[in-house]
Image (tube, rainbow over all chains, first blue to last red; front, side, top):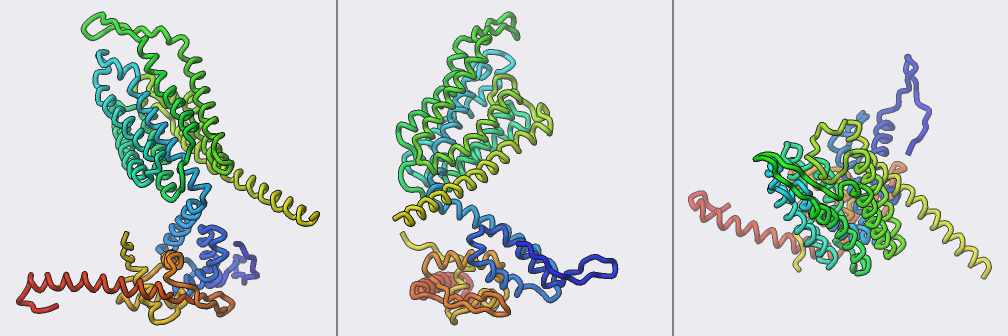
Length: 363
Length: 113
């Protein structure tokens, strides 16, 4: 909250605010980290405590006190979000969809032509990646199942452990092992969303998705995971010498439009699953899906793709600008999406209360 | 399922309120005194603790005053809060007794602690 005051001026013309006022203004700014409703109830009382703790003539909050208010305020905001049933239910949906997507991605990695054909001499080392992908696929499938069956603590523990595993894979990728960096990057992001969602849905009531919605999601995941397996079954390798050979891929000419078409089918199936949700949860799921979709498009058509359709993508393959875009697009997308959603729901609330008033008047 | 043990700040806040209703800053000062200067609650931490204790029904807002045109809210223990503090004190006493017994066995020459 900003307040204008008439303050004395120094000889140089600069405004000199009294210490107590400066300190209060700075504390009020720190209290802005708390949600508005919380501030309305507690800010004055908290301000009194914070000011009473400070020394005479102090103009700035102590660093420890400032950090404590920022951390506590942010925590209160997050806790406030998760206290709302619609947010908890959205988290419960993500707690199933996120692990399912990760499982599909891991199966897809296993079906990568270069991993699937370790007889090709230059890609023999990929056996390790094959085992890691198989472990990931099994793990995330179990986490998705636990989320669907409402075993929320098991799902949360599994998702947190899974996130730790994905971080290790990202570190290995950065260290130069043969795991594609982009794959490891998006897997960590999705695993982070899954872990936060499973934790946020701990107090959610009831099954997050109908079985019809889960079927639609599972079919989408199967298409994502299965298409490379079908594609790779057509790939043949003919050795010419000891360390050389030719790779024949008859679907290579049509794989572009086929892949895009199947991706579109997956998107439609996800929209069908979202359509079965309650309106408030549906809106939140859509707001989260849109940035994910835009980022995926960006990655597939602008950054060589998330999935390892070729040799590993090194750290230096992406310019700093591309990295910034890749990080900023989803973050800005989610923030803008939720801001728009908040405005939209406020408008809906006003309309609802407006129509209610009309009814009362006419009655 | 048994209740989770109280964390130190929550235990100290309840102990401070056992002396009578207190406002926020008085709580900070009393907790500092009770803990021999070891626990100085930050404002954010204090209100996090107060919120949790209020949600659990262990404390309530006793009254509100305006002092120097600023709101001052007093907190007080509820019956549930008194019972919880008594139970927690008993649990800690048992733990402390057990530790003292073991230590006496470990160092008999030094006598009782």
